Length: 376
Image (cartoon, rainbow, N blue to C red):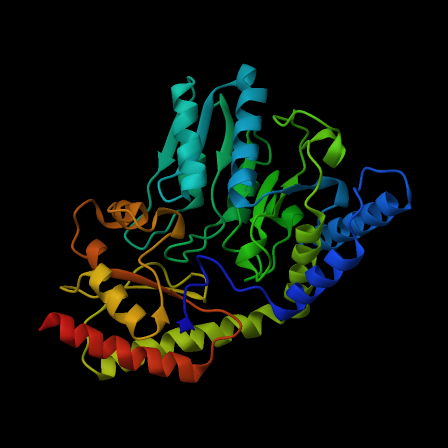
């Protein structure tokens, strides 16, 4: 099997596995315990927090460890909404957010909050003036993803942060797909809250972090871990694995990595054109280089995915969190409108550090064969 679904999840890096395996053998103390086992665990926990904070130009005290992107998104949105509802009940987001954001917003609507869902154009683009135009005096939160997980389109977070600088609204960004793909500086972006998941950067599943610059009351009750912001004994081994994954990200030349992935995508599209395969790229030219979303008119994406899977290639038709359902992509629906034929013929290919040009070439050859076979 060749894996081209890194936007869904990534395989753990060998160095991450090594660190976690070694730590399982040597570190088992509770970071909250005061004896030497606990102190050793606490020291490693705080070292991990420092590594992670430095990766986004944050202070360690602003990092809260979570179980991943969904918890980070829920925490940022729900804690802000309920803590600040006396100042207003209006929230701004987009139609193309991850379900972890959209479903949370829909819940808040049942609680009396007024949510504005900003539209995108046919390239999946959102513009900062849309946020400015939607702002109201009673807006308490703006939550907009850094980059889309299905089409890769990058959103103008810094420009939006500038608009919100003198407004009461807190600014949250789901950076799960963007983190590790380009440099993120929370001070430069002007965000108050930012959520990350380790399994998107070759770290372990079930762990992530929330950058929380603003003070919000917790919705986790119990112990006083994470400076009283998230009760529960920290998942130390996974946190240490995440920290190692972050170190590897910081060691990489992200621009060079982006060029490599962009070359993969360009090569694939050139080979499709040379074979006279009709396709359309979904999304903007300003997108994450590792995500390539293509539609092949007249070809059912579920059948195409099965053909490719049987041939040894793993891709997807969209977000892994909605995979396996009969629902079409809400992102492509927002771009093209419901029942547009491109939606049912779209696939998402996403690259990772272990992929090679030879794999891309083999995949494209099989892809062309599968499309021609299905069209017949």
